Length: 161
Image: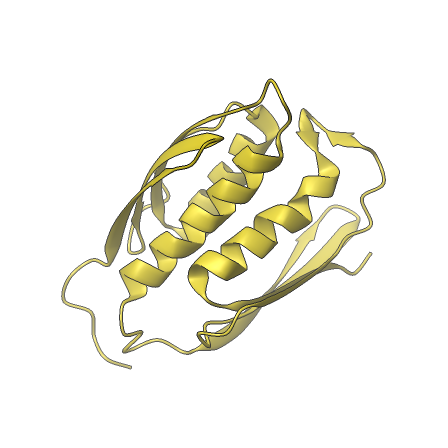
């Protein structure tokens, strides 16, 4: 492993017909966040990702939520993936692939990522309600697809039980 002498950061400004996103990421952070997407449960999930990953993340997204949540969720995934790709640069000093298991009460989840430069994703959840909080649960796959595309990575997420 190559010792890191400076923090890896990235700033992404993404503007489409449906969303406007400003994002700043510091990989070697302290778990600090300022996140506002207009979807409170989505914000909550990104906050937990940031806190437990010890990243610093600032996301401001204005999306066409009057139409639906799809563009907001997918475009935030793309922008976040792009930020990781940009901040990691040539990826020197990191392991290319890794996985994480997370238990929370009666649930066990698995996430595996390969920063290969090739894009693929697979998401398998056992979430059945249409809404979790105010987030449309079917959009979780769109988020990970967008993240995989932006990060140029293989991303596999599965709820074991």
